[in-house]
Image (cartoon, rainbow, N blue to C red; front, side, top):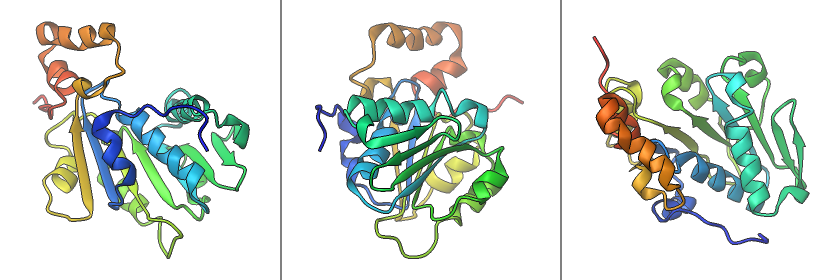
Length: 221
């Protein structure tokens, strides 16, 4: 049982119980996407059995200060660190019931291939990976599981030509849920960061479009 009140942005609350195979969260910076995904994974990690979540970014060097830290912060905020063992070297979190969260970079393919029994996956900054790499990951979770299987992809929409837009946003697939958010949806964001985003309207129109409005960017030619 959680010992502290859990603060979740209103726009994301219904997604705590979403069971689509592919859950796509995209939009602007500061919208709370990554914080929410960490919250959802930690909720399932703490309340369901027989889990091994794989959390990925394109590069292993970005793991320590991003998704791994976000997951640890969530467990700390919820007063649950006493229930887990944290392996900083392997970026692995193990719960007292045996559940695991493993954070890896896609540039460490051999170690990823050695991880068996994956039950859920989060790909952060998904625009950094190629479609072929995702296709391989999409085949990793197979067989009957005790709980629903979900791939969560979170990203800023940096290019309107990106494969993610074609495959998940412009789709009629009933097993895909996508949600677009901006900093306006994050009720816990500080005013200074909001000003930083809004200043891009005058200084960098592409950044304003992508990171402030959360709209798809345009590839320079």
